[in-house]
Image 1 (cartoon, rainbow, N blue to C red):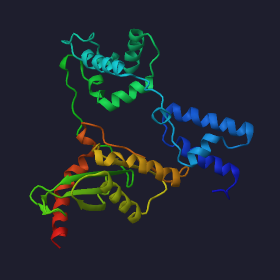
Image 2: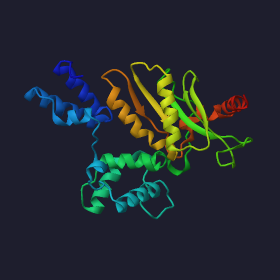
Image 3: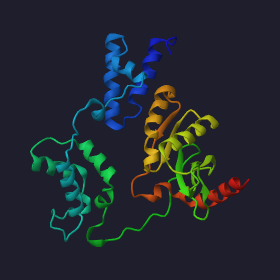
Image 4: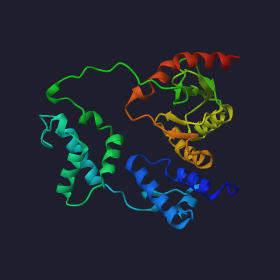
Length: 289
């Protein structure tokens, strides 16, 4: 990259710095570094560090969380109690007024200190609280939606594992165990990129199959969402994906977005779950061969 013009180097490093940000945080960071570069003509040091894969954030810098455990539990209690007319934990709030901004204001008044609004939004997603915010008033039922958003080829790749139900094989220690199938699956085309059989869904096995996926697949110049579930063996893929994007992602080009399935939300990978039975059948034939 050192052979590229300075402007091109700046744009590539800026992309690596902000590629994992969203919304206003992304716009603010982009404007800040663009202004710095225009004023000085020098690539800012944080962009050079981003090119080397040096991370940022509260956890990496050692700063404390913006929301402590007491605030977290109170916020969860507020959201759950406010959607239930019979609960005494908080006042009942109609669905239209059940917004994160309103809870944010009540929490700040109760604790007497500023609280991060974006941290509350992340907490809603992590704890699965959106269903309480959207719950109809007084038991009114909304008609369910029986359809999924249409995805283009390579827009969403799902990753999951499943255990054999009727087959056991001996492992290296002579113990009978049920094999685990792990697969990478394109949502739109139903194309199975890679499939392999292991004895467990460990981080090492997940990374091994991810490496097979990378080596066997030509990727388009676009954003690709990779959706594993929240099993412990898949969580370490976040580090591998970050390193891959830092090395190979380009502006308006290849970018692998970690889009993990939400906790307690099986519909996020319903397509892959429905294919497990046939895939395990194929894997059984492959194992016999």
